Length: 184
Image (cartoon, rainbow, N blue to C red; front, top):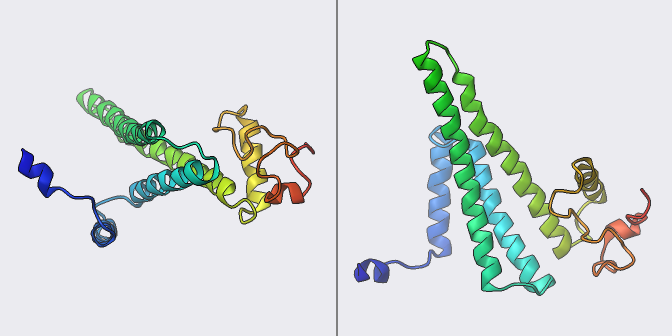
């Protein structure tokens, strides 16, 4: 067992590039659906941008936070797998009863799509903290509207306190330059 752990090493850029290449080839050949590859990429990018945001901009990074982030990302894959399992189960129960319930497999794809949108939103949130002057104002406003539409439940989108005057990013914020968040 010890030999196994000694033989393991942290993947380098070349190894990751080769893995990414073979994953892309598998997707191109129809072996892995593109939406799953997009989700996997979004998870990795979100974790990376979240780490950069927390460590270098909010100065709020520690190993516990990192571990919680990894566990959260793993649970996303568990949730997607569970959704596919539920869809498959419904389909099989229907087949046993003589019903065609193949549409139930869409449950997994729906959950994957929702989680992909969630990850992309989180990436944009992270980028806003890292470089608010580069994130388009229309995109920020769209995210704020989406946040208000679902009663502020999307991870405190864009601004944590929704008050440009006290925001730590106010000097770099392009939303402030466009009139601030106080003009609802």
